[in-house]
Length: 177
Image (cartoon, rainbow, N blue to C red):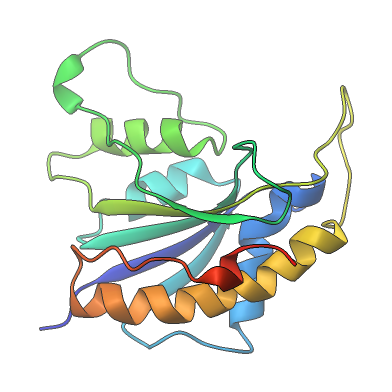
């Protein structure tokens, strides 16, 4: 039996480079992943993603913009530490799309363990300033990274479907330029 894998685009399409995840999911329509991978744009619907993470997947790949101090457009593959449900405390925030909070919420909602979670992250170039509510469109640098992310997913997903414990490296194509 093949592994179950979720590819989830996250981010706000109205906040400049934060739209990276949804843009990658949209680009995958032209270059679909294997049918065993369930691909979906969650946008800013954190509660929907939290419940989907409880759907019996072996692995989930979240595609998101993430400021890590690299050159804009740099792709990184991150394996975040999953929250421990046993820590108690108040229930996590149920609104918004901070991936760490979504993982905490999913951990709080279900009795079953979360899938292995990887984040295909892109260093943003343009994020909203101050009180900007809308900054539509991704930067040219992040637009270029979208195509590289699609290529990276075409390497990562088949490897993860074959072995959910694998951590395939990103290639040189993950770097801008």
